[in-house]
Image (cartoon, rainbow, N blue to C red; front, side, top):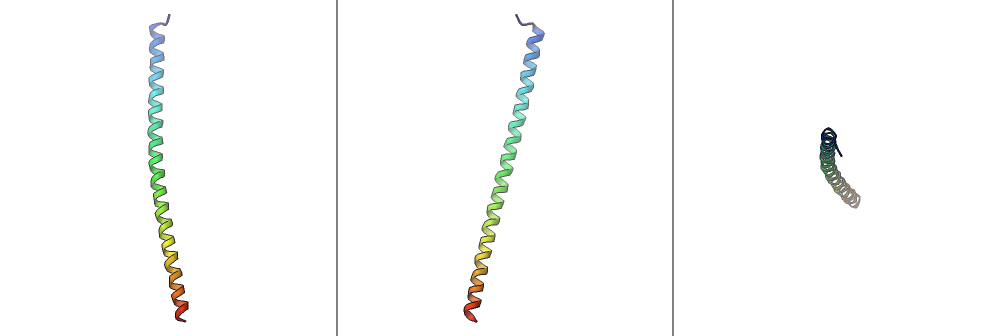
Length: 67
């Protein structure tokens, strides 16, 4: 038979564990959001650089064609 004190102790431990799990899930969610934002920024930067590179190539080609 389980004593009342032991039962309360186990319930308290389980509640603390559940709260830590909720906090861990929240942190994972926040990190996931940040990772998505960083990935978006990197993709935008990659697109911007590729666009600039293409414009530079076009400018060089036009410049060479004129000479």
